[in-house]
Length: 121
Image 1 (tube, rainbow, N blue to C red):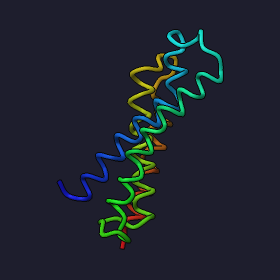
Image 2 (spheres, rainbow, N blue to C red; image 1 turned 135 degrees about the vertical axis):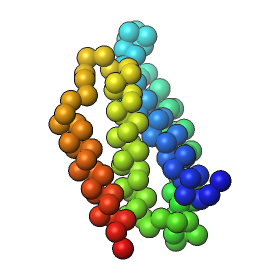
Image 3 (cartoon, one colour; image 1 turned 30 degrees about the vertical axis):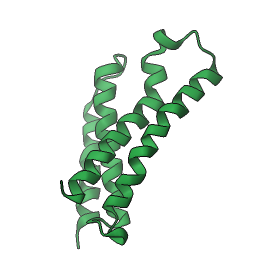
């Protein structure tokens, strides 16, 4: 697998754990509501550990300073776009109280433009 694809795959995994750590306690509140805040924080930290286990290698593999194909700016924009895509899937599938609306899609178009401008040489 190329370094670019490995970076993107690791970022997808990382952001999946990040989204679960940040928002899973809301989406699955009925399953964990008996736990106190401290327990939920510790659970989220435990999940976030896996985020870092994928995020750090993704940035190291992808960084042009370490032989990868992406500048630090490109890595950050890729991470943000992946983060919003993963969150969108999570929100649509698990967060039944919120819906995807036109203004969310308009914001994503702005992010696609950000990708275009960041990758423009």
